[in-house]
Every structure is written in structure tokens, then in C-alpha cells.
Length: 226
Image (cartoon, rainbow, N blue to C red; front, side, top):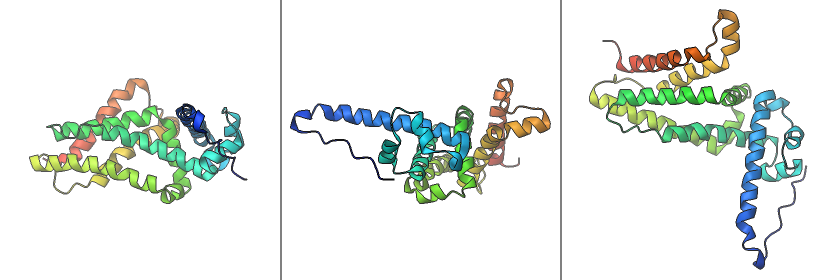
């Protein structure tokens, strides 16, 4: 399909319209990404159709192709925004606080809260794993997004080692995997786990229990055996 024609270029007398057009473009892109996120999370990459996404927005299929280039690029943009949101939250964490144990616990809790609040993120990651991370591998933005996350953990681990409270052989990627695994499993497997064992891992009355449990597991591993 051919891309939509670009919006008309503003003339000399239309300078004031420039910012307004930019705001409209940003709003349109945001709306498309919001709806696309819902559709991809609901029916997967293979099941989602640009026609359906366009029908749910105030734009057209041609404009979706104009802004994003196609379904593959749209899904990649959805993934980029989803990953960027949790990375931004991690970067706002105060990892230079005096207590590295409290810092790593706070990071684990932040991941816990984010995954619970954004089940669509879990579904998108699951879908991308089905596709063997082909969109992530092709996106320079996505391949660079995880470096800051590992950097945050590394700084906390370095502080803990320097104070003698963390074992020397811990690895930032391993710690990231441990935190992600618990948080991801709890949301992704809530239905199968609940059916098999009769326990809802996301039940409100168990929220603090699991949140504390995660922090305890991570800090116990980092401190090592007494």
C-alpha cells in the first residue's frame, strides 16, 4: 500500500499553525499507539489488523501507514513505548541512597507494581517471544533500552559490595532476570496457576504478601548464606 500524502507544508503566513499541527500529529500518533497496544495485546501480532486499529481511531488506515510505515513498524513502535515506560520509571529511582539493600528492594517493588498495573506489557512481551524477538532484534531503540536497566542494578550491586552487604559473585543481568521472572510469572500465569492450584496470584488481599516476598527473595540471594 502506498503511504498517505504528507500534510501540506505551512506557508509564510501559517507560522502560528506549525505548533498546532505538531500537537495534532502527536495526539494522533498517541491515539494510534494506544489502540494498537490494546489490539496487539488482545489478539497478538498475527491476529491484529491495521483496518481494525484504524476503525477504532479518529484517523485512517492511510494515515497509520504514513505515521508508522506498516503493521510491523507499528508493532515495533508499540513495543518501544512499552519498554521505554518501565525503563523511565527505573531511571527515576534513587539508586544512590545510603542503603543498597533498600535500593534493590525498591527496584524490585517498582517492577512488581509496573507489571501488575500494565498486564498489556506482559502480553506484548509474550507475543514477541512467540515471534522469537524478531522485532526487538531489528530495533536499535529496543536493543539499547535494556542497558540503562542493567546500569541501575549494577550501581546498586557495586554499592552493596563496597559496604560488604552483598556477595561478590552476583551479576546484574541475573538479578534483573530474577526480578522479572517473579513479576512476569505472577501476571502471565494467573489464570492457569489459579485453575490448577486455586490461588489467584494477583488477588488484592495477597498483593503485599507477594510484593514483600519478592523483596525478601532478592535481598536474601544478594546477601548470601550467613
